[in-house]
Amino acid sequence: MKKKSNFIRRSLISALSFLKDSVFAEEYTSRNGFLQGIDPRLKVASFALFFITAIFLKRAELLILLYGLCLLLALFSKINLGWFLKRTWLFIPVFSLLIVIPALFDIFTPGETLFTLNILRAKLVISRQGFFGARLFVMRVIVSVSFAVLLSITTKHFALLKTFRIFGIPQVFVMTMGMCYRYIYLFLKVVEDTYLAIKSRVGTRLDYKKGQHIVAWNISALWNRSYHLGEDVYGAMLSRGYTAEPVILDDFKTKSRDWLWLFFVVIFFVIILYIDRRVL
Amino acid sequence: MSNVVFELRDVYFSYLGKFEALCGVDIAIEKGKKVSVIGANGSGKSTLLHLLDGLIFADKGSVKFQGKELSERDFNDEDFSRNFRRSVGLVFQDPDIQLFCPTVKEDIIFGPLQLGIEKEEIKKRLDELVTILNIGDLLNRPPHELSIGEKRKVALASSLIINPDVLLLDEPTAGLDPLTTRHIMDLLISANASGKTIITSTHDLHIVEEISDLVYVFSHEKKIAKFGQVDLILEDIELLEANNLAHIHSHRHKDKIHIHPHVHLGHHPEEENLR
Image (cartoon, rainbow over all chains, first blue to last red; front, side, top):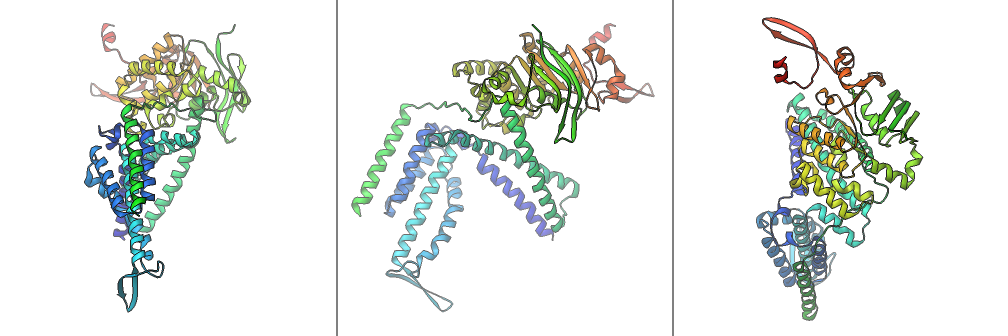
């Protein structure tokens, strides 16, 4: 019983700390690195080109080259490579590997036999086409995820949100996203404080079933609070002149270095896709 | 022309039609005055400020702003709404409600941007406020990273930047350290000196004397128990006691326990010594 209760406690603390570290870590965005200095709009545009490149490349060597560029950019942006690799390799590639496993076998991807596995007297054949297809898929995921993480850790969240507007996303959506980001933190704090308040009254020896009840009550209390907070915040917006369409200040400044960066990325995009197509 | 900014006549308001918050309130606030609304928790002070700010509307009675009765329909008119919001600013009790943007700077300039104030003018006002409030290093930070004192300063800046004629403040010094309280008080006094009407809801009697020409005391019955000049109200210990604004205090003095009503007001030991 105690183990289970500890499990809830540990899970709650880990989840809160993970959310705080991952969503609200502003440490890297404030560093004086290469990508941090690029105008967020041009940075998003250039990263969109990297994503497109990762999707269309068919040669593994070129994907490795693109990944190398990503790591190089991380290095120039003063990102700790160990931390960056841990963050990108830990989760999403694991899921992509799980998704891709069935595609390895000739049942789903028929073709030439590459390996034959004997598992519980069952013969499983990995086809050459399946293996190379799966490898390409995993590599594309790794490269895309790495670029996505690099973009998010070198750009302040509010700037990233504002750049959504260059893709024609309505201001009200951008603002709502910004507010969600703002209030998730507040609710995380509420959850954390509630947990401490419970701990101070009942200690750590909490029956598993009782623990479940407390969690359920908290969810309901949090729901109530978020509902009232929503009303109050809307009142605060009205009080300062909000009507239906929010106005946001666009104060980005583009320097010649930013345009040079975009030019380099476009050239890189054209050359790498040309090589990819020509060699094939 | 009448000098009255807000006039309330026999105003009733209840939440969800069953939780009474104001029961027959009459108030008249003149332009350029400092007015305080004091009372215990739950006596209707915040509700009154929300009514004055046109966020909620009276169930019964009338609320007039510059002679015009406020109704929900008026706020559907964009011109009226914009002019009203430019004239009246509210600083909420909980700064977390007021600071909803991803950064401090965006929060401060949110109001003037919505009200169509020129960008150059916004920048000028922002620079001025940043200097006055000394919040330059906070501008690019997310509000959740700020201390309560910093949040209150930013919330105040986000209303002051609109440059309203009437400033409504809901518990502006709650939870603040003495120095920050002093800073905010000085700012309010200087805003009043420049012609703004200041309406403050509080139960902190330390600040009432300085920021009030007139004081309204709200009772547990959610109506006005008494109103008048600040010194007359603060001298009425019986009234303050009856409305949870003063308490019975006991302390030991020369081996004897003294019990007497106690009001938290500013102390001036030098003056006391001179008497």
